[in-house]
Length: 446
Ligand SMILES: NC(=O)C1=CN([C@@H]2O[C@H](COP(=O)(O)OP(=O)(O)OC[C@H]3O[C@@H](n4cnc5c(N)ncnc54)[C@H](O)[C@@H]3O)[C@@H](O)[C@H]2O)C=CC1
Ligand SMILES: O=P(O)(O)OC[C@H]1O[C@](O)(CO)[C@@H](O)[C@@H]1O
Image (cartoon, rainbow, N blue to C red; front, side, top):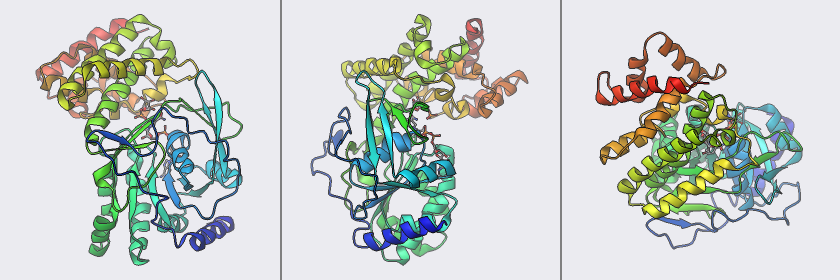
């Protein structure tokens, strides 16, 4: 650990010993059975021009956020900072950590008609490989969040486990850990990984009593951004929605600006994953097939636009049956998403949106998940099949998962792949549908 981070952490330890585990305030009592907002509407700006200092506020409670990437800086870290937390970002990227410890602030550009800049302050960084610094940060944290990508959860679990064990030994109480990833039950998955690193029964009991792992749905489009004033600058769309599973909190529910609570998270995670992420992935794979570079460009192609809206309509009808959403409202939700995809101020590469196609083709993810749901209710899924077919054609030599898919298909293993990746048994009607759609899709290749 650097002398600087030792010094800063020591100061935090002293200053925060009385506030650790104590969030800034409690969430409002009211929670409808659907969604309640913790303190504001999702469309509200998070601008606060009075926050301009780059000094660390020693009296604030700490949030440790794993992953100082796009969502970390552009969404979750920003909300936490605006809610009065000091945000300690943990990342493996030294340049990001160095910059966070140099500036203690960064800019967010809202990429919309009224383009504006917000300053996020009271932040610092710790290298994820610095086990002692991380343990100490978690010891003194009031909340831990992640946005590292689903595959990295098992890596950060080790550090979180070390911090939890230390908290038990030091007599700390409640902590909540929220994994903000595009997957269902991400925090529950993280908790299982953390438990693997806690062989001691005392730690396990402590975790079950004092450490909550509420899962969430996290929605804001934050593509890589190169126009900012430094490496920390991030460009985001104006829209954001963060819906967190209320029953899984331990201790008082923190009052975080923009965080909404629900008792029925699965419905909201599936609504987001099977609509926004489904439509986005469909657009990316079809766009890639036809040689377009960005989502916006792809959506200008009427053939793609029709399939994207068609796929979201098919998943939407199924979601309404499954979770009781009202169709007219869901249609508005789809149209709003179409407009978000068309945002001319965002240049979103189809390769970013299509990244990791094996993960996106998994049985409960954004493409196959809605097909299964549509089938459950006897509803159509032709556009969703086109989306899956385009994903199987997805070519990006920099993406290992795309390379693996294409190489297995070229070796004549498509039926095995459809079985072991998508979960459709060889010879089944579902597998046959996918194979037919895959063949038909070839004629659209650029
Ligand atoms: N970018 C977006 O628009 C959205 C992303 N998400 C989800 O958020 C998560 C993060 O996505 P992005 O921010 O786009 O990715 P990103 O690649 O911009 O950020 C991930 C960060 O995690 C860091 N990281 C990797 N290994 C780590 C480790 N062991 N310890 C600490 N940090 C580590 C990386 O260095 C990077 O800075 C993903 O699960 C994604 O699906 C969800 C909604 C929107
Ligand atoms: O982050 P993933 O799961 O690879 O998928 C990218 C998706 O996530 C988002 O970044 C936000 O949900 C979308 O822009 C895109 O659909």
